[in-house]
Length: 151
Image 1 (cartoon, rainbow, N blue to C red):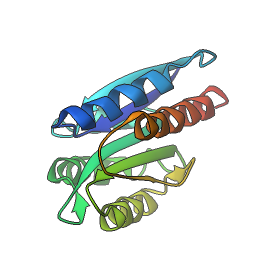
Image 2: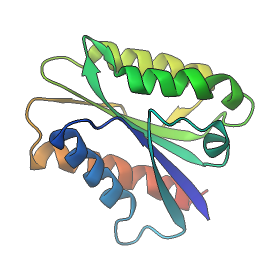
Image 3: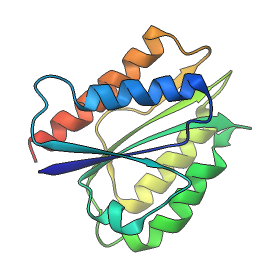
Image 4: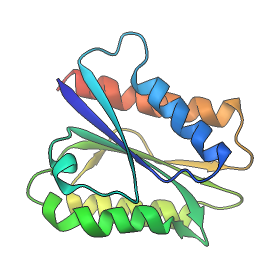
C-alpha cells in the first residue's frame, strides 16, 4: 500500500479547514490502496518521510516565507531524505492574507534539492478560507493520492 504523508502547520481554524479538506481529498471515493498519514510540521520524523511514497505540505505564509514550523521540518528531514526520496511526488498549499510568493518559492527550492516532482503547481491561497479555497486543497490531495495509486 502506498503512503501519502501530509505535513502541515495549521494553527488557526481556517488552516485546519484546509487540512481537513486535503485529508478528505486524499481519501476520496475511488482512491484505493493509499494510506494517508497526517503529521505536524513541528514533529519531524525522517524515518516516516523515508517510508512514505508522496508528500503533501500545508503552511501559512508568515512574513513572506513558509511557517517556521515547516522550515524546522525541512531542517530535520532534508539530509536524511536526500538518498531515499528522489523523484517522489509532492504537492503543497500555502495560505496567506495577501501574498504567498516567497513561501512557495522557498518550498520549491527545497523540493528541487530533494529532487521531488510536483504533481500540480503549488497552491497559493489568498484571503479568508471558504469553500472555494478548501475545494482547491481537496483537489490537490485527490490528484496526489491518485498518482500514488498508479505507483
